[in-house]
Length: 578
Image: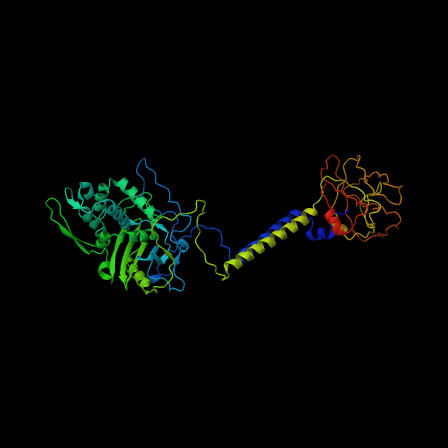
């Protein structure tokens, strides 16, 4: 029995359409993937990698990437919410990296052709920037989110300078004196100007001064709200203060990039710039206690040539943090380091190495980003940004896009062609055994004669399809009426269509019985009978045991309409599914 469609196509694709379809899909997918890879297409966004060790000073590991949405987990209970309160969720990640696409990278971000960053720098995140132009000269994971510790006091001071008069008198309280952590020396009943409180806040990192300024600003909640709004206005979108002093609290977050732009804005304030370079200051006493001198905790002010300011910080969760600034050759540079350690190299010396690195760069070196002055406006439907990846193939973008488009079109056309061929040769469902018309040409096997079993050698045909390719068919369990077999006009009939011959049901035999007489094909009129060929194997119809229904579909051979071509390609296009 011959299949629908072209025999050559059937031989090429094989008897398993599902396997062929799966193979076609896999091959086409591999073609498109390879084309996209060769065209330099950017891969989908992936989760931020965990910190990867890199060689540092004395073999110290260098964390390459930090968590992208929240700081690392705390090591103590400082961020546990109070009863009845809930910890805030992570801040949303901007659709595009603030300051430029390269600042969305996780590892060291360096100018093209620039030397590697100093190996002594082991801080998890840092930013080196020009205070005057805002150019980011180099960075490491600039938007990695960490805790600021006392470097957050720069933001507290910026809010206080903008909202309070410098000569306003603030009276100290016992609550100020009882603040946890570093204190400048506020006592209950003491009287301090806002300018003095700002000096104690920046020079000596006084948490008591931060509390006194917050009270003057309307309270801690109001001050935190002002700090948050100021950070958002400046474009510091990784920053959320939890305390006014920088002590750890639920939801505390910032980044090296944010602190760099906040420090740059603060240094535009003459009062802040003057306080920031001060090394020694006379602090007033309170009650019966006399005043005393306070000194800066920024060691670079006394040791690094051209140092003009900075701010230190430390908590158990934040580890060591630092802002440092210096001026040399008419250039003012600032560096911010987050989550550093004091060994093997102290963090202030790590800052000094980065400042040296920045001053050694040529003034014409292209920046890797910039410090913004205001919140950037993102498209409302912008997707989350992925770390930028450079085109390593060296192919121009327009050429890679053209190659990707051509590869996609070609792959789609190949898939469509193969699927069309596959659908054209699908096995018909629900058909019955039938006969071919008398003029179908030589080699077209018809239905078996009545009483003949389909087994044993067959008569010779000129059919190009080997009988080993012919599918099996099942004989109905009980004989019954079959559909009439259509015939086409031929020389044996009267003018017009000859009456159809009734279909014959092959005789049943036991499933394991011996072969019987050969198939006797219907020979078209006017042609000699075909000679038998005894060495061509044929398919055998296996009987279905009595009592078991046989609901497997059989096939029907569609006749070739009179006057149409019978070549394989024409039959492939004429194939239909019943």
